Image: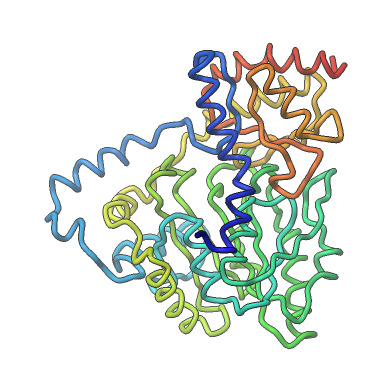
Length: 396
């Protein structure tokens, strides 16, 4: 009955989601306090108080027909102006409301821009390790994902291989900054070099290449690390943003696309993206959450809580003999497996009720992702279990 396109997706269901379900099963069996689920990027830090208050105020103050009604498929004009003004204030940009398209989270935003850009057979490049769904999103529109192999020492993009893999069918490049699963942040120097390659390839091949910057973790950067704003480096850039992590609203599905005036055929692309938003079935971003974002545009994530978790888990695992690059952003550690088959390592962890995600889910075998957007107490309770795993592998 189901389509041929869906069969491989059913057979290869996300390891991350499968691990999440396994965590619920183990919690029911052993008690939630005895299960150390580091699988899902589901923020443990609550949404800022002003977000909850905005919801209450809006329900009490606004006309319900307006509050819950349709609007432009691009989103409310005043909300889009507010987002544009906030970005201009923070990053010295010059956006206006017709550069901003409100979306049903970042995942929907990526699908909107890919549907807008791709013809069957077009190629989209990305850098391993990468968020597992990128390939599915590209294949939704009969495109092909081309993967640049990882630099497993620093996890910075392999720009030499990147240049070699750009071809006449290259339509877009997806970067994720800060990165899931490694937590690295691409510096201004990296983005300058990447932009230089893209401009050179556009001229050599006579094509236009769109750089799509997927940025749900933009606000989660530590130790004073700057996350550069990509539109300043390359004209053909589209920004995809979500409030899922920055305001702890993953279930509310609210985000936006930035389609700058500098993008080639910007007005045509924006208009097509608005239609893509509608015909994909999103129609418009959630009405109530758009109004909430407008009132909470300057709200901040509790970065200190994530930083505290980061330091406890990173230092704890390093002391036990595990190896990983210290993350500069997001809320993940990408830990080197002590054996070549990281799935076997995941199984060894699971014996101690530790749930981590294999690196093959991110096209980077030999590593596992450990999500520290959990309670500080869970990390503290998990370290003796990690010690047992480390002892089994002779790490400590």
